[in-house]
Image (tube, rainbow, N blue to C red; front, top):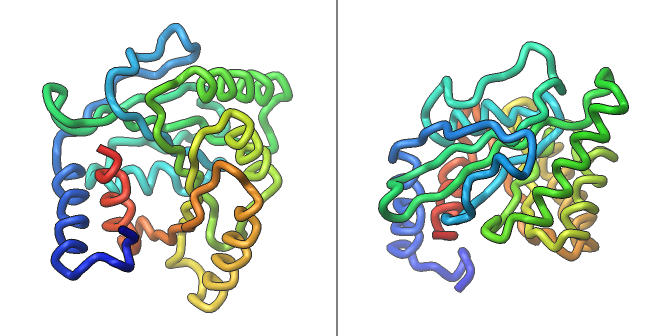
Length: 219
C-alpha cells in the first residue's frame, strides 16, 4: 500500500509510530574511524550523509528534538568518523542512526578525501543491517557533483538511498518544486535510489513527521 492509498486513520497511525520512535531515548554510542570499531550489526541501521554545511546536524537535532545531539564542527570537513547513535529501547525495537562525515568541502587535503572514500566504501559494502542511507542535498542548489559521486558509490554497493532536500525555508516554493522535479528526474537513472525525494526544513519542521514515519516503518 502506498502512502497515497492510506486511509486517514492509517496515515495518522503511520505518523504516530514515527513520533513515538523519535520521542524515545537517543544515545550516542561511539565514533568509528575504522570497520573494526563498528558495533555489532544486531539492529536495523540507517545513515545520514551529505555535503559539509548541508544542514545534517540541524536535521538530526530537529528529528530527535535534542539540540545538542549532533554538533556542528567549527572546521567543516575535519570529522572523518562514523558517529553511531541508538534510538529506542535496546531491549526491544530500536535502531542505529549513523551520522556520516560531511563531504565536498574544498579545503580538506586530498589524503583526507581519499581516507573518507575508503572508509565509506568499506562501511557500505560490509554493513548487512544497513537499510537505507538518507542523502541530504541543499534545496537551494540541488545535486552537486560530490552528491553524484556518493550516489554512484551507493549504486555500486547496492545500498538503498533516498534524497532529502534540506533548508526548504530558505528558498521560494516555486524554486523548490523545480529542484524537486529536476532531482526526481535525475535519480530515476540510479538503480539504488528511492523514487520519492523528500523536502524538509529543520527550522520550520516541514517534512520531519514524514521522515520520522518512513524511518519507523523500517522497524
